[in-house]
Length: 164
Image (cartoon, rainbow, N blue to C red):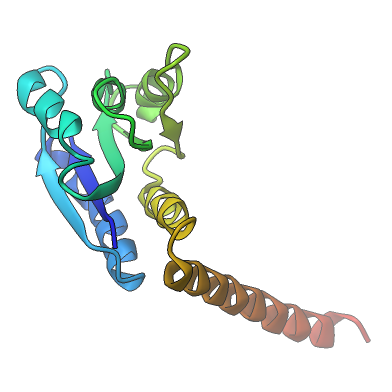
């Protein structure tokens, strides 16, 4: 199975990123976690992205706040799918990071999830890997069936209470 890389621009992003780590663990997807900054460690970030394919990665998740250039910097140096997580900061509630992550030039795409959307970033990476991994695809289908059953059970309770 391919691995997912989770790169954060700062260790202060860890509380958000841990949600992605736990989601990947739930699906049995191996991951590596690193702190590389697009601005403070650009050479290390570039090196990681440039060699990610040969190191067995199938997708990269990049979490950064404020200027949030990390996802774009990684995407510029790999052909792997890069999923950006804009991190909420004290300035502008993460809108700055969202716009920095999502506004990429043609030819260097970054898939972008919601501000602090680590769970969806992990799930998107699982979906990407599941294209060629039927076991992962079945795990995703099972999770969706379970979520559907929970909603329908809640619906039945509400209908019973209010629809007489």
